[in-house]
Amino acid sequence: MARLGHIIKFYALLDKLEKSTGGRRKLSHSDGRMDWPQRGLYFFFEDGELRSDSGAGLRIVRVGTHALKTGSKTKLWTRLSQHRGQAASHGGNHRGSIFRLLVGTALIEKDNYQSLTWGQGNSAPREIRQSEQTLERAVSEAIGAMPFLWLAAEDDPGPESLRGYIERNAIALLSNYERAPLDPPSEGWLGQYCNREKIQKSGLWNSNHVDEKYNPAFLEILERFVEQTGKIA
Image 1 (cartoon, rainbow, N blue to C red):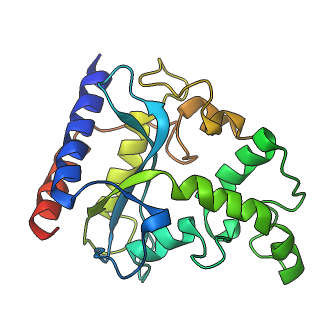
Image 2 (cartoon, rainbow, N blue to C red):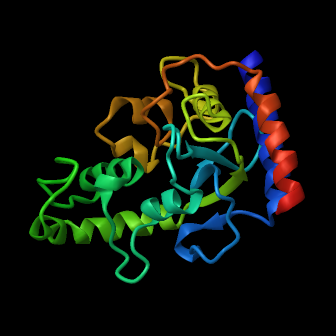
């Protein structure tokens, strides 16, 4: 039951983070003019997805960060805005966001959207992108409704980033992939319709790290960043 104890501690730290940052945000009501750190992590929840083993409240459905390559200039809001999509049209570009791509595949299966080009290639000509905008808007609506927390972590970009360390260990901790499930997804969770086994079985909108082991020592690093974020938020 060690994993359950670690999950409980993880959510306790996020509760502390939520209080210090003024609560959860939604991408549908967020923009670049808000107070964002240059670098950090984000933790998405999803309405209807409840914790059942570790306590009460919504469960995390995606963990992410950015700028993990040496020299990367990507900012936290830049990455979040890629997930949000375009504010004016409510469309987006799933080729620039794996989160959007995954949610789109689930919507295709669940709601019978027609898009033979979805997920094909790293880029696409304008006519193809235009044909995908109905689905892109549905993805924006789905992701935009998910509450999330942000964590400031101003370390240097690169493979040794502590942000990357927290991200992969948090995903590995929360993932139910090929292990006894804790806080499993609901039967109606949108991710159940995704065409990727790791999404369905992990209970997360994450493909990477769901099949890895976690190091509980990451919780100490997470706690340190939570305390630092509370001082600047």
